[in-house]
Length: 147
Length: 244
Length: 114
Length: 98
Image (spheres, one colour):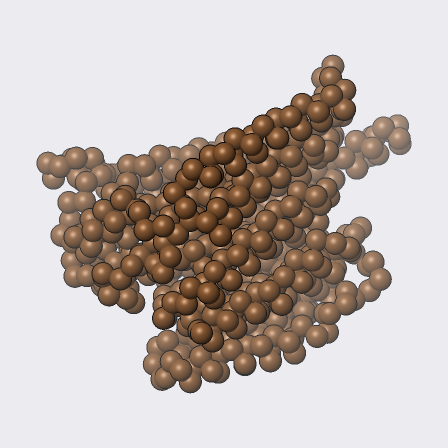
């Protein structure tokens, strides 16, 4: 049993799956928050997959998503949450919880990975991805609340 | 034809296509099987030419001519989009207003731009080694600039991005690909043949012409996406009016 | 499991075509076309998969391990990016349609022509 | 290293995710809202490609699907909506504005 892959599968089914449900229904705000959760959690899935398959090269996917994911959410915040469609009942549910969830999830994923990887360039890359995820989480939360 | 009749025709077509697809799928070699004659040969050929990423080797060496075709489709679509979305004589532009954004977003935009740019360049540069390459990295590089629009505002993006430069970059990328191919002819081999020394396996300078073609594609894709988005942005945010 | 990926590819294609044909908005139709297009990537990569194989990228593994088929991956990867620029071209056509007729509903457009 | 049972779970889960996202993308008739679902479809495809051991294609899909395609679609929607408002304004208001 490969624990990393099992964790990735669990996170995919229990974390990203429900995001699809929320992203496909309801007001734009709710959808954008779900999209935000999906990108940030998926980044962790990619990290777990890279470790589970024993392929450090796959970490590049997480790296790219950690910069492009927040960019995508900002696109929606700028073009979908402003104008006539905005202001449907204030702050969408789950906005406030996003940063703590991302912080805990990132710490719970990146730190064990760092321990397994040991000091070196790969660890620096992991820490950079973790920092980008946190910064992205904070900035996108702010953008969604700002509308 | 009424809407109802159209739906009936559609249903019949979809059902027939579904039946054909299912019939075909049942006779395809089963998922995950060991029989991959082309794949095995492609891997051998890539390793002979010291290219660690065999996918890049297929794209930029074994099937380089095919990729030229793909690139030309890209070039043509960008050209078409630029022509379709140009400002006509009877349209006027309005200066987009600056938007007030929270300081957190502004700081994120300014900090994330160079990081994203660096990630994109890294993905392009390691195309012949690890997953990535000109197609993927080019998109990341182009997206990086637009962080200024989504995190700050449109005037901020316009100050930094000179569209004319990227239009030239798009053409240069396409030309560089074609001319690298001519290099093969000059060396007495076929068009787009891999005539450079193959280098040391798993280093940046390996794979012969693969890194060159990869870089050309990176330049073209990045410029193409910037040019495309520039047209969409100016249509959506600046251009008003038009023929009646 | 032996045919599930192919069936999923077929489903994505059919559902995309259904959306394309019943769409009431050209922008939505372009989105549905993108969905139908993604079925080809699913099909190609499923054909190239090999049980127990890993990516045919030898920057971090030794040559000689079991790998999946790189040819189909090369086909899909260029098409993902080129497909996006073709989507852009189609969206540009939609913008032109909206400018000229003030609508992007295919039925309304049909009525205007007739 | 590889574990057939977990591999299969990952592949089946991402296949079902992609199929569900594709269906949801088609059924969301409003293009701006559809763009959100399309971006999730892109992410799902990227995971599927990765578990099918095609990280190159996954990267391609991430680059295109996460920010570029939604941006183009939403900009088109904004332009089209402005154009439609203009037409409606002329039709109902009689006089031309501006």
